[in-house]
Length: 225
Image 1 (cartoon, rainbow, N blue to C red):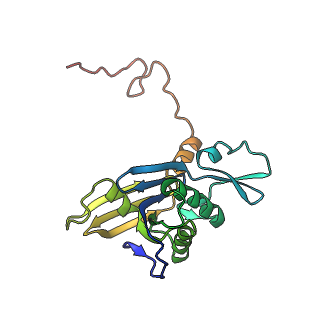
Image 2 (cartoon, rainbow, N blue to C red; image 1 turned 180 degrees about the vertical axis):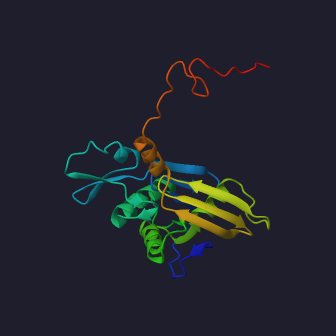
Image 3 (spheres, rainbow, N blue to C red; image 1 turned 90 degrees about the vertical axis):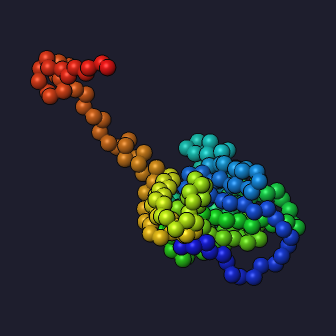
């Protein structure tokens, strides 16, 4: 999947900043050209009676502690928007934090998306970005974004293997000539790995008196050089 731009005409309301958005399951990061990473917040939003009461780190602190009238939402799951309204409000807040509030200048956004997203799921990301105040929206495959962020010479003819593991999904790809030659996307990430490790039974500790081959009193001696 190459860099995809929405072909729908959009009014020109002035030149805004160019922002790259890593819309992750666990965290959202925004990079601004010339300034670096200008925002790094948890992808969490808290809503009460239809109104946003907290976003990002403040909302994350409410997880498991909020009263029943406050709904604390993690709107993305495995890189997919599962709660559109919460995602749009969260993204709008983050973009305003990174770009500022302006009716004249609107930012151009590059948003990374997993390659397993369907056309409908991609449309949801694009629509949420426009609703958040973007002037123009580009979708960039996560694996290619990871290669660019790691300074991998992805425009060369030589292929480069890239693996990007987030909280909700894992991207594996070979990149060359500015695109993805071959790749795979898994809806499993760091959270799934952490859960599997927690559920894994603790390894049994060896009984005292047994050596490396399991014989009583036998130990393996290492030579010190």
